[in-house]
Image 1 (spheres, helix red, strand yellow):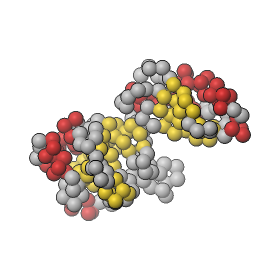
Image 2: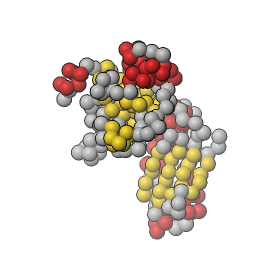
Image 3: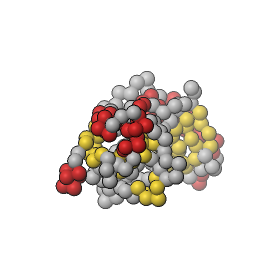
Image 4: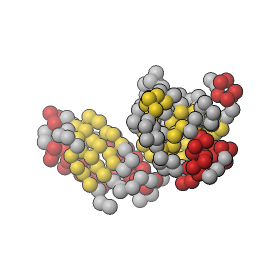
Length: 227
């Protein structure tokens, strides 16, 4: 598809780079964000990446009309489209205690897939994941790469509170709740790692788009002793 640019309110434009979520879309989004961070259009006040789009917010007092800002943005977009993602991604290993009180939905997820719990854990932890976006709550990673057999719909009625560190499945994605929040994903485990660290002013979120992730099963004893 060609690049599409549409208004978002009266102080932002959204650049749509792809039609579906995947590694190609991620590479395009990362390339555009990198280019705009190095050479932002005058008046830019915020750059927000998503699965297939990048929203660019601006201050009209510093750049005049939306048409002026759009022209500045359009001039930068063609230079940012890579033929291939050549970046070297970080790999982050996340320890997870599966099932029981840590993953109350594991049995249902496994049954839906026609597996016992051990096989479901092996399938989930054996996959290679990629962070496609971070959002919903600070530091929440949306991970692509979930084995199709484990695809499970969200709960029709979300829980009022999901414990921080919970690893969930929502449709064809998996993710980790950094904070205790309401949530409707199927909970299969929990990690003792902190995914959101507000005390780290330079990089409060542990994960960022493009990172590769592996889950490492641990025991309840290891979870309790984790520091």
